[in-house]
Structure formats: C-alpha cells, structure tokens
Amino acid sequence: MARPAPPLYRLSRALGRLATVALVLVLLFVAALAGSAAQIRPSSSGFGTSERMVGPNEVGIDSSIALRNPGWFVIHALTIRAAVSLPKPNLTLVAAGGSPSVDVPAGSNTSIPIALTIPLSGAVGRMLATEDLSLPTRLWVNASYAGLFPIALALSLNYSWGAPLEGFTASSGSPVAGSNGTSQVPVTVGFRDDASFPVDGNVTIVVDGPSGSACGTAEQIVAVSAGSSYAGSSDVSVLDSCLGGSGDTVEVSFGGPDWSFSIPPQALP
Amino acid sequence: MSDFVPPPASDYTLPTLARRAVGLVVVVVLGLLFFVVLPQFVSRELGTFQLPFPYDLAALSEFGLLLTVLAGLRTFFRPSRLLGPVGAAYHAALIVYLLWLAGASSLRLNFGNGGLSIGFAELLLLLAIVPAIGLAGDLVTGFEDLTRPTERYPIDFPPKPRPSPAAA
Image 1 (cartoon, rainbow over the protein chains, first blue to last red):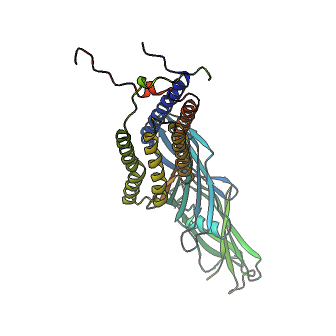
Image 2: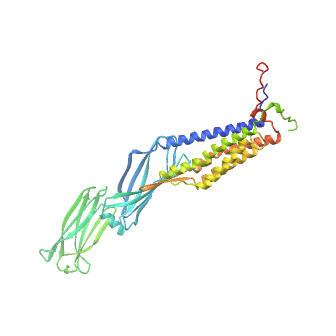
Image 3: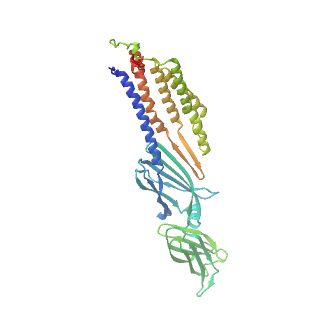
C-alpha cells in the first residue's frame, strides 16, 4: 500500500501548484486586459466643440470626447489637459483648461467634458476678436487602465478659431458740410461673425476734435447671427467749430452685454 | 522530528548523474531562449516599429544568464538537499529581476503629432507573486530536506518496477 505523502511535502507541493495557478491567472488576466483594451474607441459622436461668452471678455470653448469602453475593465481617473497658443512666431499661451477626472466604467459610453476659456481683452484678445486663426493646441490625456497600466497620451492639434468680429473695419469719409454750422461725417463699419455665437451689442462711433474732445457720436445696434456679415453706415453730426482739420479722429468701439472691443482712433480724411 | 525514520533506499530510485545532466542542459537551453534570446527578439521587433526598448539589453542578458544557470542547477540538484536552497535562490533572483524590470517599465510610441506612453510596472509587480509563492515552496522543501532527509524521495523518485518472476 502506498504510504501517504508527508505533510511538509504536501505543503511544498501545494505552494508549487498555487504558484502555477497564480501564473495562469495572471496570464489570463493580461490576455483579458489586452483584449478588452483593444476594444476602446472614440464614440461615433466623436469630438465636438462649441463656443459661447462665459463672462466679461471671455469666450468659453466647451468640448467633449465621447469614449466607448465595451470591455471588462474601468478606465480610472481619465483627465485631459489642453493648452492653446497663438500661431508661430508668437506662440503666446492663449488659454489652458481641461476636463475633470472621470472614470469610464466597463461597458459604457462616456462623454468627457473639456472646458477652456479664451480672453478677448488686451493685445491677444484684439487679435482673437478680429482674426480667424489656426491655433496650435496641445492635448495631454492621462488615465490608468484597470488600475494597472498608466497611460499618457500627448497630441498636437490645430484649433480653428473663428473670430466674432473677423475683418472688423471702420472707414470714414470726409465731413460733408450741412446746415447751421454742422457737418456730417460718414462712417461705415463692417465685419463677419465667424464665431459660433451671435454678436449682439452696439457699435459706438465718436468723432473727436484735435484736442481729443468728442465732437459728435453715433450708435449702431448690432445683432449678427453666427456666420453672418454686418455692414452699417452712420452719419455723425458734428459742429464745424469743434473740428480742427488735420487732428480730427474717429473712434469706433463695440460694446456687448459681455464684452467690448475698440480699434485705435483713425484720422479723418 | 525525533520519530522520523528515513525511508529505505529500496523505496526510491534516484536519477543517474547523466540523466540529471540532460535535465540541466534542457532547462538551460529553454532558459536561454526565454531569458536571453526572447528579450533580444522583442527589442528587435519593437525597433522595427520605432519603439525604443526600455531596458539595457546587455544587463538584461546578464541577469537572464544568471536566472538560467540557477534554473538549470535547480533541476540538477532536485534529488539532493540543495534543491530547496538553490530553488529559493532562483525564485529570489526572479523576484529581484521582476522588480528591476518594473523600475523602468514604460513603452513610448511616438507618432506624427504626439506620443503615447504605457506603463506596466504594476503588472510586473503582480507577476512577482508567482516566484514569491515558489520561494515559499522552496523554503518548505529546504526545511523538509534539512529535518527529514530523503523523506520526499519515494514520491519524487519512485522505485523502478521490478520485473515480475513470470516475465523472467
């Protein structure tokens, strides 16, 4: 009759078998991870952006990336950081933002919101308000797959920026003599709203004399939907005695509920 | 411990030196393929995809060689008291090897407008559980061989069946 295996021998053998089982389980786990990770795709709804005024002289860019994770493991702490800068040679940082930390559960289709704020003030803001630009954008995506694989993705893209006052121009004509010692200064304002939000507000035209004092003003009410153009003319009534000839200028500014914009004074012809 | 009676030599048949040497050679060849040749192959394959291999290939080969030798010796010393210590040394070295690999464990893929980096340190640490259990088993075997010499031989090396008188 076969003698029973000694206890120490059985313990040693059991540990050996346990190691083999652990190896098989780890290999199966890795295979499942690889198979599951291979199914992760951006959702068909993909990547969308929208712009809107979010505060005084600030445009918010809201975007989202929809991610389909049909596998068996969670994508942990997915965060996206974005930095937008002006085109070369300037490359000034215009905006930075990103997403909150999001967990993408297994078998889910999750949208990750990304928010950026672009200022429309200062020299950079003036450029962004009036010029359509292709803005170099850097994206950093960090996540951990199944808590085991840290993933870091860096991408360089170009963001197509549509200026709300693209090609903003104000042209003035020579004063036309009127009655009672007044003249009419014709001023034409034009731009195209290439942003994805409407431009509502007033265009204020001020004709200044040589001393800088206002001689006459006019206002145009602007309500331009996204993608539309605007062209408006005003005749600014001024006292002839206020104007001085060569030092006369015209100032044009735009003021809306959330933001304002002005161009440098131009000399009257 | 004092009541332990070693099994009689007739209860087991230890493999010959030649057989043990053959076992050693087989394990060394397999070990070289796994620990030395495979990393070189992986490194070359990654290179064809412009993926940098994250490890020093020479150091990896030297470490792999050490593991291969220990694995071979473990096989060679199976019918001896050295099985436990050599096996423990092999598994301990394997744990150190995996921890060392985990230290620089990320793959970086560069493409036109960016790059992707994937780390796998945690996976290697998870994998280190396997040799840790093996190490525990070897320590038990070493203890058994120390306190109850030859106790395991009748099971590990059962006696060759004797030819029956009828056949003779």
